[in-house]
Image: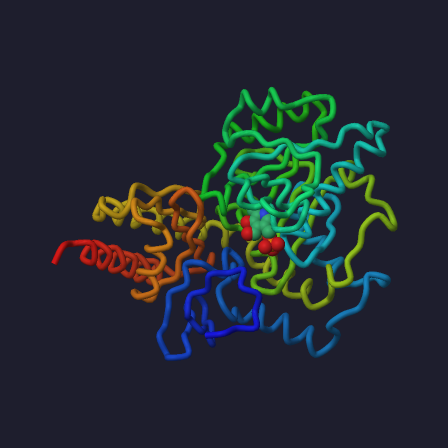
Length: 395
Ligand code: PLP
């Protein structure tokens, strides 16, 4: 089919016309179990009544006013976030990439204002993903991301994921910050062990470096805490969130301590849409639900059930799977087959998964997936694996 759309995606020929909780309905009537959630976006599933009510109520009142005026919905969401996190200040964006842009600017401006303008370098890690803007691709640094898009924004120092010695060796007088995902998403569901995140925090404190966490994919309840770093008992200076915070409405944010945010004064940053009433009304409904400790307890219980069932699935299909890894409801099946082939087999079994690097198939279901849906989803994954094995047998 010819398309007028820029062809930057390899799209499956699926036309979803409706979403209901954990289910996506194709135009031909097939009902798919959605273990992708729009890549960790639909935190409360599709068409959650609280979010529909928040959106429609706000839509009937006021969609947009500029940030030249005080926006009560923005204030309310910012307060909900600061009440439930390390942060004192919040800036709203429309995406994770824009959050990355601000996080980088904020870290550099911090040191500039402290009289150390040479501290501009940001240490990042192999396999990371921080978005597709010029700063985002420079931060990730992989050839796949940057090739052909030069000149690449300077000031990013890349070290291998999990290599403590390489990290400490990379720190110099010009290091401004370290930027890391507590659980890598696109890089293949790679959780940073809690003691490593604690160690990073200690080194940052010792050397005078800002710790910037990218919780765009792993934040907002995905790992069973509101923010993934809470498992390590540490707090960052700056944090990027997006995806789940809007539950499907385009919304992102940068959260920061008062000190880390101190350079971002009037006129240093802005956004036309960021923090508009519609997005913030929906975001508030998401946070009200997800920050509830009882809801997070439920996420952990469901995560335990899914993980256990996936371990059995892996054991039953040693020709297809190598293992399962991840945190909470951010899980990865390591495959022996091409992950995109398994995702395709999943489509045939009417279950949605998402491929990632390092031979990983990602499972990022809505956080409120039911136990019965978990059981049905794993049964469908089992069917997909069985079908792949059968297809690979000689006639
Ligand atoms: N950071 C992480 C960890 C992500 O997973 C993503 C998106 O996948 C981004 C940043 C970019 O977010 P967005 O696509 O909303 O711009």
